[in-house]
Structures are given as structure tokens and as C-alpha cells.
Length: 114
Ligand SMILES: [Zn+2]
Image (cartoon, rainbow, N blue to C red; front, side, top):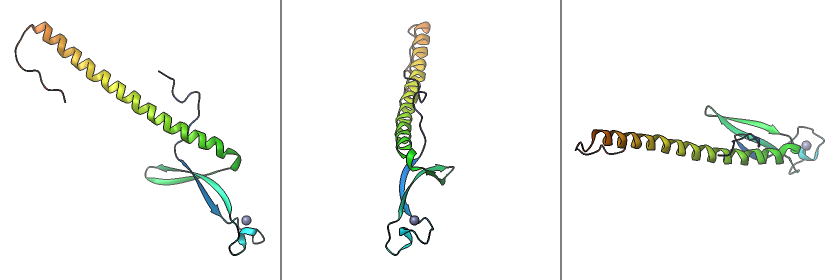
């Protein structure tokens, strides 16, 4: 099993590009139809509330990678969790088989799984 998240940083959320005015009245963005500045935000949901974190431009590529690492980690968590569920089910089956053997041909239907 691979070690999770240790070799790669990850972050929950998605990277969003927005366009905005900087507030400087002399800037090109203040003119009507002027080109606005682009900025990146990392948006996440915490307890149902959206949260946005400003991402400086020199970190955008890192953050993009971290977001994609996060979805890999989520997939991995699902896989490992599913695997552990199987372990539990297998253990239960194993115990039933053992106890069935011990009882030796004690008749009766086995309880259905699930
Ligand atoms: Zn501006």
C-alpha cells in the first residue's frame, strides 16, 4: 500500500479564476469596458459554507497540483476504505465457517449475508 499524502501536499477545494477591478481609478480596469485583472481563488466548503482563499499568481500552478493530488487522495481513501470493508466481511465469513465446522454438520440454513 502506498503511503498517502506524505510525499505530495494536497488541498481540499477547487481553483477558480475570477476577474475583478483593483480599485485604482487610474488603472485600465477602471475604464468602461476596460480589462479587469484576473485572480485565482481556492474555494472550499466548510460546514456548508463556501470559503474562498486568494491564491497569489506564483502559487497557482502549485495549488492546481495540490487540488489534483487531493482528488487522488480521495480516490485512494475510497479504495482503502472499501478494502477494509471487505476485510471485515471476510472475517465474519471466516468466523461463520469456523463455527460451522466446529458444530459439525449442524443443519440449518446460514443466515444470508447483508
Ligand atoms: Zn486595476
